[in-house]
Image (cartoon, rainbow, N blue to C red; front, side):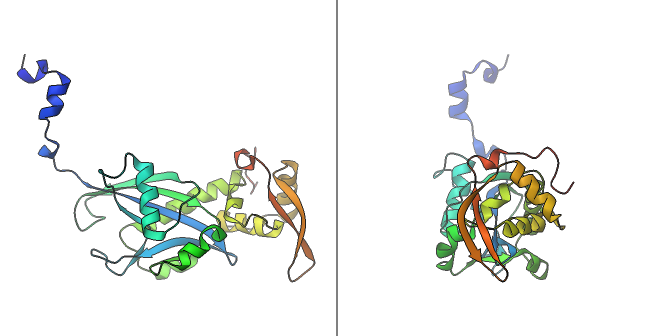
Length: 243
């Protein structure tokens, strides 16, 4: 039996050299989406250093093992450092890793996504010169850093699925919103029009909204303002909204 096999764990860990194997670069990235001016937008930041200097990409960065204890702390810290905002929630999206995505070497990123209200972070984003909300329809005209377009596309697909079976997209709206705004956001995420009467009926039957008693006068007749009912985000439709 070798000396190492009879070695106790404390001694083994004391002698272990974490540098005996090459380690990949490890980062976290966030695809944050919002709904504003009738369009779906994603939050991008302009890179201030090489590689990909001057390109726009997702808020992200390396994991500082001396500063954070886990991935949640890492991604929240990066978002705050890069944009000045605090995401209301974050959902882990996917991990990407290969020897091509970053010119600095073999790289792995753990990506996250969230859908948030524009009004909740409008002021903070306005004060950060190199961060802005960008219409997702403009992205094909841009060359984003690294593989961030792939991450954004995965985030949009996740939002599409949520829009099909839940009312979670409403959390990207203002606290008080109209039914047409809610339906339009679902249609943007799903990528197709929804039958107006059917959409309204299913939302009302599930008691997912509360009437605020207020109205907003747009181009047509005054529209009722609603807010989300308590625990509405937990509800799941039996059939997808597009059915």
